[in-house]
Length: 443
Image 1 (tube, rainbow, N blue to C red):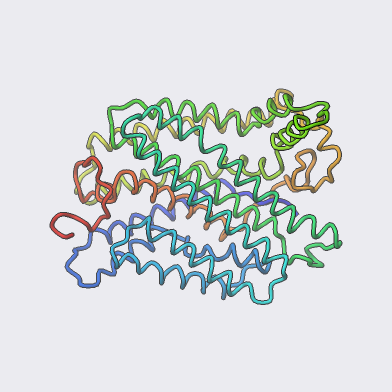
Image 2 (tube, rainbow, N blue to C red):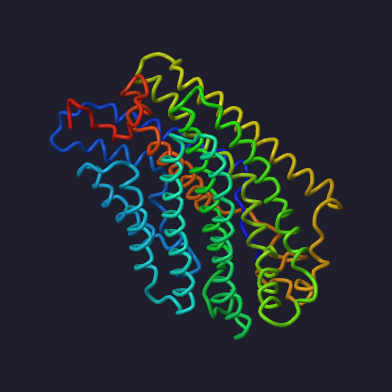
């Protein structure tokens, strides 16, 4: 069994679907606010969050190794029911995390009936890592928002520097968890996918969780940079952030930083406390198959986040009844085009070095740690059959893309404010992060 990746054409198709759903949702936000129970808010949230309503498929696959439509529907019911928070004054961001958590919980509760103990342990830790990482990403967004108002250049560099370590921490935790509760258990008991000690192809669940985390990181980072541009269209802080992000991401995806650190900590470890710490540092610097998968997913998942720029432009233009030519919108379109170009160049550089100039890349087979591992070990990066990727099924890919677009949109709303994005306010008002139905005449 191999890891699963999201095909580029699949990502493009579902990104367009997300754009259409979000634009339809923004039209509901333009509905009058005379209703006593404004259900159009819930409709707006459900359309804006796309197919995240089916996030329960991850819990279903983790528990049973297959998609249970009953669990999927139970999770969807939990998601839709929690979306009623929009009626109580909550915004999109405050509604999304409880809805997603409820979806995963209820789908996992249903799918967990009759699941093997190993499936339970692995699925719960995967879901916990997913939710905790989203909370940490939210904390990064809040800190970036506070810093960018006074130190835009420093905030951009902070964002570029803080995201890679978080990605590494999340990936390492998931890899260790998969190794402990799936790989080693099957290896010890002689189990396979066909003869389950842990039921099903859990590399699918592993791949979906990693893909969603990759999409979340990319979406939030883009939203933060784009939000900073709109808040201060004359600032050039975003340029240094994009440039530093290009360099850091390229080196990270090629594992150059890890290779340098691994070379510095390689060799005789010696005895004593220093030798022990050097040995641990060496192991931490070595990449794993999960690390390579996480970075390779960026080829397809680096682009769905740009949907928020299209949604914002068309939503504002629709509401203003003319193409939006405001200073903030023009600056956002220019910055978005520049970021998209940097993304394309980055992918081209990484692809060219991977397939045309492999002699320039690190040769991990020279490290003795890999020669002592089995080919399918989660830490193995040399001739690991798991790295012969297989396409991710369409429904799972749709869920990944939906998370990318939704989290980018939520981050964008948190920084810029929903009223400006929807065109309810023609000009950007500094510090306005109000929800879209909250105005002086209504609140």
